Structure formats: structure tokens, C-alpha cells
Image (cartoon, rainbow, N blue to C red; front, side, top):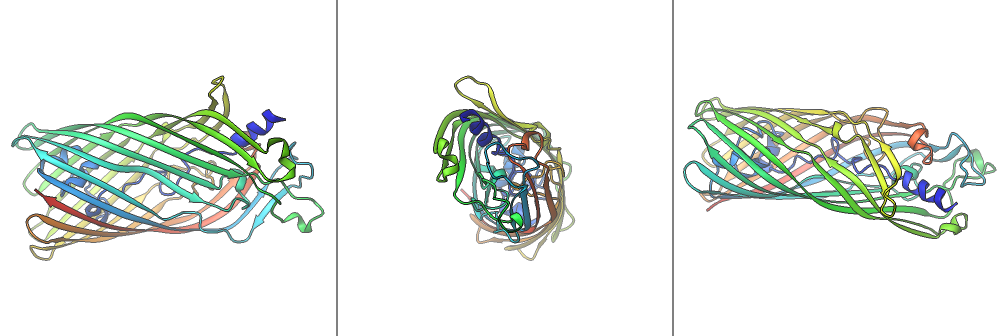
Length: 441
């Protein structure tokens, strides 16, 4: 009985990758780039923050520090959810086919602030170094402990921080190459409730279970990756950029715990076990172009590919015997991000930015879960730059992200057998508000 409950608790925890945005990648590392929907991010090199996308950018911005903060405000709304089990569950004595039904769910995507900072220093006319601190991956989704899909997840928190040291060398007047070493820290907390089923004598079987049971997994790890890039300045008005950021393989170490306040689970009032779980933050390849049409107008474009297919499953192992306790298949696909943008220089002090992007989801219909009810999305961006003086520049940006409607339709088979099935509908959008400052020293 104890082993069965342990496996059930572990099985209800889904992969860390179920996040709020396209996958769990956070591009919002540059407020200047945000105003152009990150078009030309690998070629623009307009301030030190662009080094996140291409380390070769630091050659054009020596002796500079850039501070950026972006507020992410999600309005993802569940339009209804039905949780059920296709077969009676051995843990629940009075199991009906339907666990619970929610006509209306709370907004599951929480607000978050994303900070970043980058600094550069010229060693001489052909060599520059830089350092940056960023948070390129993350998520926060939060449901009620007793919502209809509680078996599939209630809380998902992932924070990933990068400390990157970079070096850029101008090989010729036109070509710069660069590389960097990335130290990446990942911290994850996942929770889910355990619905105990409802008695068939209750009206239509639509009722939430009495009592609360939940599982919690927490783990963290620090590992190393790299970034390489190049910047080719075809003319003084046109430049091309390309960069590759490696994947980072983490082995999270932590603990899983189970607790319940309901008589049904008195045999497992509390349970704790040390575990390990592998998490891969995906590689990112990006290519962009930037062109000054004249003294007023500039245009730019970007194509980015995120290699989400490297994250194919989440395997949770007990630390004592290193045997798999739970395996969750993800089967995500590689996804593309395309953007175009333009900037208009009003005068020496003011610049206006505009952009549009298409952001492809890596989630397939068969693997979509409530931890990330993800879908393709469209970005509409605008922003401005104000040059206060030769030392200080202020940037502000805003993006409205419209997400297509999505459906979660899990059948409760395979790895979901212990979680039961779930049908849920979602719609929503995301607002990004960015503010940044660039200081030349």
C-alpha cells in the first residue's frame, strides 16, 4: 500500500517544462529589444543587454552597463475543466467515473518580475569582455488544491539564473567572433493535489472531494553551458548576427513529500523521500539582420530556433536505490520564433520602436497539460528610447501577446493512469511591461 501511494504521488507530478510562455523560455532580457519584439536581437547590438542573444554585441558597446526589468502579467483563463478516471482507482473505495467539474477556474498564471543586468569593458580596440546576469527560463502557475485537474498539478515554480562571462575579438574591420561560459542555476518546486473521488450518490457525481492531500517536489542544481556568436558588419548601415546557446543538463537533487488531512489517507499522513530528476534547458540558435534605411528609419528581423526536442521525458528516481519511480513522456518539438521590427529616430534624444512576432509552441496536442496550456502566440510590441545625455539612456517597452485557444485532453492512460483523465479549455493573453537604463562609463 505504501509503495502504491508513493508511485501515485510521484506520478501526479508532471515535468518542470510545463510553464507559462512558449515552453519555459523567457526572452525578456532586453527592454530595448522588447520594443522591437526582439527583431534583430542577434544583430542590433544597440546596448549591452543584446549580449544575451549574441556575445559579439559587446564589441560595439564598450564600457557600458545595462539594467533591465520586465513585468510579466498573464491573463490566462480556464473556461471549464472535467477531471475523471476511466477505471476505478484502487486507492479510492467509492470512485465514480467523474472526479470533479469546474465551470470556471481561477487565473492560473501568476505575475512575475524578470530582472537582468549586463556590463562590458573594452580591453583595446579589438578586444572586449563582458558579464551578464539573467533569468532565461522560468514559470509560475498556481491552481486551487481542489480544482478538477489537481491530480495533474496545482503549483509549478521554476527559476533559472545564468551568470555569463564573455569575450569578443574583432578579427577584421567587418567580422567579430565571441564566446562565453554560462554558469546556470535551476530551482524547481512542483505541487499537486490528490482528488479522492466522489460518491456516486452525490448529484450527478459533480463534486470536489472532502479533505486535502498533496505532494510536493523541490530540487535544485548548478551546471555549466556555453554561448558562441558572430557579428558581420557588411556596411556601416547593415549588419548580420548569428549565435548559438548550448543546452544545459541538470540533475536536480531534492525531496518529494506527501501529506493528507483526510481519513481516507491516514496510512500516509506524511511521507518524505530523497529523489533526483533530470532537467534539460534547451539549446537556442538565432540569426538576425539590422539595417539603417536612412538617418530616421531602421528595420530589423530575427529567426530563433529553440531545441525543445532535447526534453523528451522527466524521470524521477529514488536516491536510495537509483531506480526510476516515475517517468513522464513529454515529446516536445523544436519551435521557431520569427519577428520583424522598425525604429524611428524622432530627434537626437528620442527613438520609437515597433515590432511583430510569431511564437510557435513546442507542445503538441497530445502532450498539452494544465501546467502549460500552451498554444501558438502573436506578439505586438512598441517602445521608446530617451537619451538623457551622453552617459545615460532610458528604455521602455511593451508587448501584448495574444495566445490562441487551447484544449487539454488527457485520456488517463499510460503514464497518466494514476492521475486520471482531464479535459480543460483555456484562452488568454500576456502583457509585458519593460523599463531599462543604460549607463556609459
